[in-house]
Image (cartoon, rainbow, N blue to C red):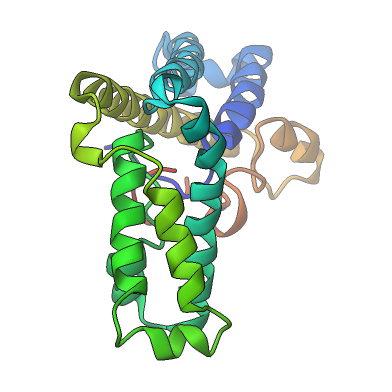
Length: 238
């Protein structure tokens, strides 16, 4: 069963490289794992790295935008961020409202059609009369909504976005996420084997445990506890 995680793919790749290198450097761990597990994990790491590069080549339709649209894209992203920040301040604790009306926490897919759709949803709710008073208490003005909408208007309607390119980007994202989840499971297994082989109760094991990133990876609250791999909350990857 694949675990999901709440940290960037870059963090997974960076730590994966170190953990797999440690496993290759310490063959004592091999009896605890399947015969080709470490080698297969190195292949899985290479696959995720390639997936990320492939996805970057397929995300959105930015290569087909006009010069004006290219220049406006950063502004559009900026207004999405500003609107979300203001909404979080205005509607503290209203998780469902923030997610549905202001798309807080929704950052995928990355194709242009999806980004424009998120912008449309946010603008529509910025324009909702019931929301405006709370937004205004946090500094938002109707003029900000107008500017945001004008920047959005520079782009073609999301319904006219090239569908084949959009599907390619979504497929690329799905492949990357599945491969990343597989790699993550593999890293947790290697760490658990290392934790059993070199327990924390022996101070002499501190150095080798660091090589396997034990109690360092996964980051934050998802750190590996002694003798057990972490089980992060189930959530889509970023």
